[in-house]
Amino acid sequence: MTTTGKPGKAANGRAPDVDGLRWLVLVYKIPAEPSRLRAGVWRKIKNLGAIYLQNAVAALPHSVGGERAFRMLRNEITEMGGSAFLLESDVLSGSADAVDAFNAARDTEYVEIVDKCQDFLKEIEKEERASHFTFAELEENDEDLTKLRTWLGKVEARDLLGASGRPAAKEALLACEQVLERYAARVYAEEEGAH
Image (cartoon, rainbow, N blue to C red; front, side, top):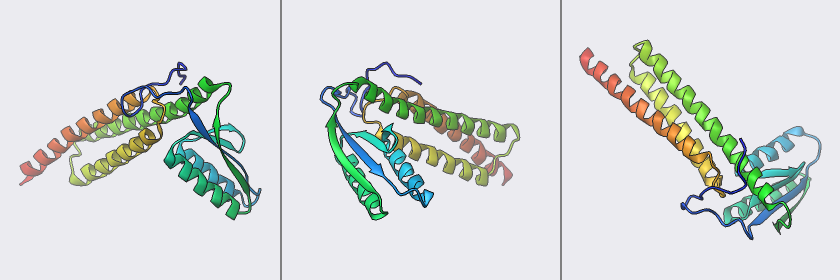
């Protein structure tokens, strides 16, 4: 998914100010072995929502939470025998590209959420077609919906520049909530009818 170069709206409803946007840049080197160390650092960087500018060079829009997380990660990297530098930086050239890359990463996550929501809706539809209205199935689907909510919350928290995919993901989650409510009502009705 591509972005227009103009960021969307931040969580507060206003377009974020990308002029003068400061970035945190983590430059690191990790020993080649064991490979699990590299994988662990990569996962942590991805979970923070950082983008890779190059191999072993990750960036985040500056925030207090992001700085704290990168400082802790830098410490972990040095403790595992690697080296790391944490920089705060302006983008002198290519600022729009950095914003686009960051928003594209969030939009990819939002698309994944929409896809999982569609899978969720198909699962409920399958249960309804099979007339499988049980509390066990309702509980399982409720847990799946909770996971989707949590996932969306995490992506929204790292969507500092207002990626365009947020509304579609929120709409997809709302559809899941509504369908699960309808399914739950049917489960309750079936249960009452059985007694």
